[in-house]
Every structure is written in C-alpha cells, then in structure tokens.
Length: 349
Image 1 (tube, rainbow, N blue to C red):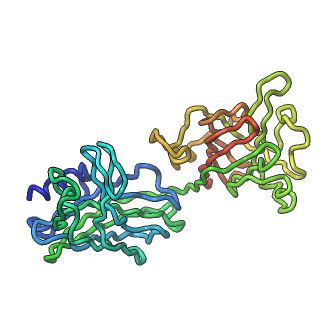
Image 2 (tube, one colour; image 1 turned 90 degrees about the vertical axis):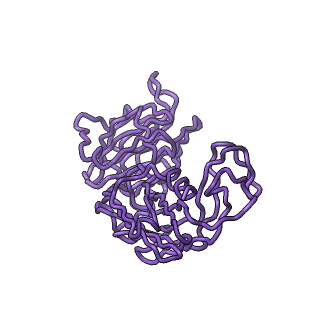
Image 3 (cartoon, rainbow, N blue to C red; image 1 turned 90 degrees about the horizontal axis):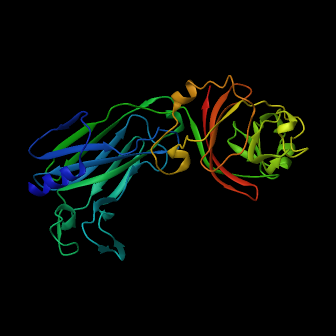
C-alpha cells in the first residue's frame, strides 16, 4: 500500500472531476490535463493518467474521446520519474531534478475514438520506490502514470470534446475518470514561415503562406496578398528596417519601388504589438496565449494599413480586407540581411 500511495501521490495534484473506483480497495485512478494552451486543430492535448492496483497488477489503460483524434493520438510507451541524484539510464546521463523515461507500456494502439495501453508486468523498482537504487531489481507493476496525447482533428473545430479514462487490473478490478468538456478553438495556426525581402515576401492570410512575385503572377494570387514584407535600413531619413505594408498602402511608406504586384489592391488594417508573445507561436514560455476571444473582441477601427520597424518578438493584429479573417502575425526571428521568420494564428470572422 505504501508503494501505491507514493506513486499515486507523486503523480497527482490532480483534478477533481468525475473519477470513480469501482472497487475502491482494489483500484485507484486520476488524471491531469497537462496542456494549458488553446486546443487548435493539428495540435496535441496532453494528459497524464495515474492508476494503481492494491491487488494484482496493472492490466491496461484506456482513453475514450468524444470525437476521434487525428493521427498521432494515443498513449506513449514511457512513464517518467524525477531523478533524485545524477544517474545513467540506457547510456543517457540525467542530472538531479531531470525527468527520466521508463517503459511501462508493453504496446499501445488507437482505433477510432478509443486508445488502449497494455501495461508491462514488471518495471524497475526504483520507479515505484525511489529508495531502491535504479537498475538493481524489477518489481511487479502495481502503479504507473502514463501519458496520453490527443491530436485535435479538423472536424472538432468550434466543438466541445471530453474524455473518459479507465484502467483494469490483472484481477479484473476497474476504475474510471471522466474529464470536463473542453472547447476546441476555431483558430488555425502555422509556425515558422520564412520570408525574404524581394523574395518570398508576399503574404496571404487566407493561405497562411508567403509567395514570391513570380508565384503571385503565375498563380494569379494578387487578390490574396494581404501584406508585403520589406527590409531597408531607412526611408526618407527615418528608420524603416523590417516592415509590413499593404498592397494599397500610400507609396510614401513603401520602401522599394515597384514591389507591389500588378493587380494587388488589398488594404489590410494592422496594429503592431510589442509585448504579445504567444507561447504557441513563440514555441517557448511564458504561458501567454492568443485565444478566440481576442479575435472576437478585436477592434482595428483606428488601425493603419502598414506597420514599421519590427523587432524579434513583436507582432501585429490584422484583418483581411474582405472581412473573412482576423490574424496575429508573430515575429520569431529577423536577420538584417533582409529575412524574417513569422508564425500566425488565424481566426474566421
């Protein structure tokens, strides 16, 4: 019982939603939703599911989604524990405080909305009792915390999703947990789009893609171009550097003559922001996120159709001229040879 209590408590500062133990003395379970970012199509929602048996050993874990996930949905084969001291596992050295992987799942499958993990019979005893040195003995797997990743499918956009986790022991004891309902964003997201002054500098919010002038002409894309990326140190004595202009921007703000493609006439309102560092677009902390409500309440009535002198981590809110989309374009990196890498969140209006 002490081993079970240790592994369950170490895994759970967990949620208080509907968890039930069919035989309270024989099986325990709980879950934690690890992902705090908005649920966007193509992105993962990660859960930790903890289970423990007081009689027998772990048999299998199951996750049932209310909407079947996209490819990549399912349980991982490894559980994780925190190294108390420097240690070596499978030839890899881990420092104290680092998370160490340990296989606890024999095999995992996903069919439709149901994912299943068949648990191993034994695992290194250190995982369940850290006082036992790693690599010295194997023990019956009576408790484990496994990771379940749900890849949000396109068909879930704007809908609510929920999950039921369940586990079974070798004696047939069962336990289950049901999550709350989570709303899936209507946003689309694309990361790390490379742009180059005079090259792939023509950006379409509808396509979430940058095109060259030749591509715009050959594919008849002039009507889809929302802004153009330009780089020049200065313009008329003022700092210019990395800037965005609409095709219809006043020519006095367009640093390169003749850069606007023939037939491109969109006037895109945009508002530069210096401190909106969305963690999903940045790919790093802090855990600040642009969500649907930010676009639903976005007011660009006083915005101009250009934004100048971008630096790394700056961004801009925009709306397409046809009113179909709102977007936030985040600057991941810049290069003063005239290159910029951006990421975008786009919301249908």
